[in-house]
Length: 394
Ligand SMILES: Nc1nc2c(ncn2[C@@H]2O[C@H](COP(=O)(O)OP(=O)(O)OP(=O)(O)O)[C@@H](O)[C@H]2O)c(=O)[nH]1
Ligand SMILES: [Mg+2]
Image (tube, rainbow, N blue to C red; front, side, top):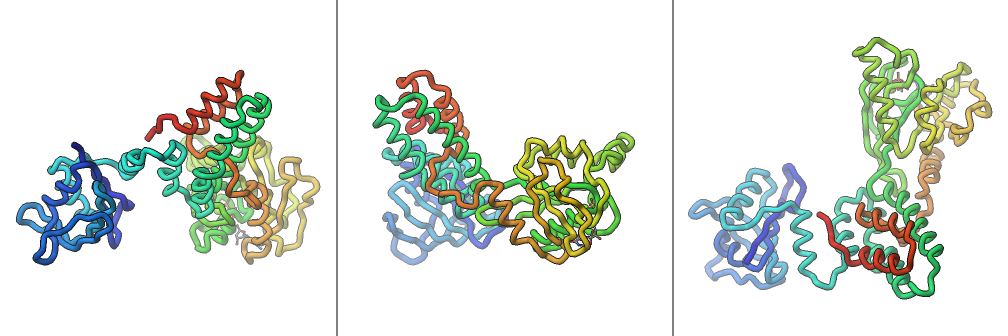
C-alpha cells in the first residue's frame, strides 16, 4: 500500500500548478481531501475530470480540477500560487503520501508500465529537459528508431558481426552524441577577444536587447554577461567576457582587472564554441599567445567585426586555428545570417539527422565507451542487453 505525490509544474508562480498523486491507495487519499462541487458523490473513473475543492478538515485550501488519469493516477490542477501548492503537498504528506520530485514520480509511473525498456524510460525522463524542439525529437526517436533500432540490430546479428564493426558503430554513435548533446542541452558559446573589438555589441545584437554595456573605452566589460538565443536547432547560451589582455591579466593581485581576466579565462575553458571577435578596422597585432593557447582545442569561429569601416586587418596572416572567419558589423547587423550559418556548420548541426542513433544519458554513454573497448562478442552482447534493460538511475 503506497501513495506518492509530486509537483509536476515548474517552480515559481504560474497560472495553474499540477500536483500528481500516484499509487495503489491514491484514490483513497484523494477521497479524504477532495470535496466535489454538486450534490452527488464524485466518481473517480479514468478519463473523468472533477471540479471541487481541496479541504483540510473544515478549511478550504483551493478550488481545483482533478483529472482521473488512471485507476491509480490523479492530477490535481490547482491555482499556481506556490503557497497553495505547498499547502496541498503538506496535506497529502499528512495523509501518508511520500513526497517526491517530479522526476522521481515520473519514474515510478513509467516503471509501473512493465513493457517499457530502460531507453524509453530515460527518454521520457530526459525529454522535458531538452532545450529545443529538435532536442526533444532526437530523444523521442531513440525509443523506436535510433539507439533502440541499433541495439536490436546488434543483438540479432551478434554472431555475424565482427568486433571491429561493433567498435566502429559505438565510436560513430559517441561522435554523433556529442553533436546531439549541443542540440539537446544547448551550446555554451563564449564571445572572446581583445578589448574594444565589439564583443558586447555582438551579444546585444544576437540577444535582441541591450544586455551588455557598450562604450568605446577598452575594458568596459569586467563581469561576464550572458543571454540566450536560438540559432537553428541550437539553444545558444552566449557569454560575453572581459577582453583577454596579457597586461590586464598581470594586474596586481585582487584587482578588478585581474579577477575579471581570471573569470574570463575560466569561462573560456568550459566553452563548447568560441566566437573570437577581432576588429577588422585595425592593423595592430590584436592577439596575444595567452588567448590563442586558451582556445587551441576549441571550436573557434573568428568574427571580423566592424566591416562597415575600411578594412585594415589581413585575414591571411591569422594563425591556422583562426582560419574559419566571417565578416560582420555587429553595430549595423550586417553579415549576421552568414555568422549563424557558420555557427551551425561548425557545431555539425546544419544537416544533423534527428533519427540518428545517439546516447543521451551518462549511463548510456558509459556503456557505449565500454562497448567501444569490448574484447569479445559475448561481452558485447551483455553490454548491449544492459543498455536496453539495465537499472535506471534517477
Ligand atoms: N563602426 C563600428 N563600431 C562598432 C562595431 N561594433 C562595436 N563597435 C564600437 O566599438 C566600441 C567597443 O564596443 P564594445 O561592444 O563595447 O566592445 P567590447 O569588445 O565589448 O569591449 P570590452 O568590453 O572593453 O572588451 C563601441 O564604441 C562600439 O559602438 C561595428 O560593427 N562597427
Ligand atoms: Mg564588452
